[in-house]
Image (cartoon, rainbow, N blue to C red):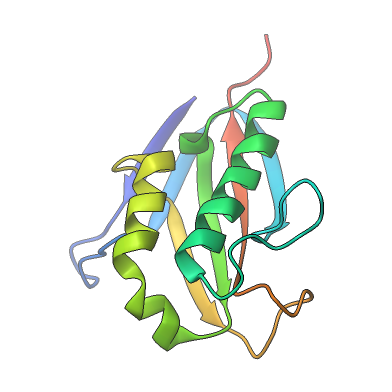
Length: 136
């Protein structure tokens, strides 16, 4: 499966995301929104945006791995946050968590600040789409 990153020169240079990702072949995987919830249904690191971001990515990795893929098969992510100021204040920790799962690979991404998430302690929720290798 081939992924082509699309960052047209006529658009603003993306930092930490790609404008588009085109794929050739493969199977689609739709990832439900993942929060900083652990396997006991508890939000980890209450009040810690970076800690919850890391747990949400860990949860996504669990689903992608179960489907036979890897994190760099994710081609699109939407990140919902409850506090843009807290997100910006935690960019270093969030970036470190991101790079531990993706390295320097950046899918198409959208960041949205929302009033609240389903779990009151959740500060971040991430959903995505992946394209996995075609089955033979």
